[in-house]
Image (cartoon, rainbow, N blue to C red; front, side):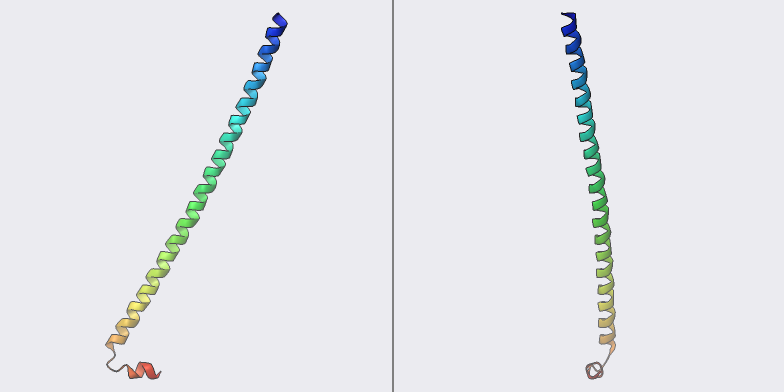
Amino acid sequence: MDEGVANNHQNDQGLALVLVLLLTSVGGVLAGLLVLLSAGESVIAARDRSSQQARAAADAGLERTLAELRSLGDWNLVLGG
């Protein structure tokens, strides 16, 4: 009877080890996914910032062009080349 209890105890230890390894693996995968998601968010934020800067530069160029056109008295000079 003592031999059966000892085998049962070893089986419990083996099962506990397998469960700990499984949970550690799952935790590692989740941590890796978190790192990948945060890196992806950084790339998206950088692209958005670059897009906003390009839009602001285009708007500034358009405003400058309109200001120069408004200052001209005769648009025929512009249209004629």
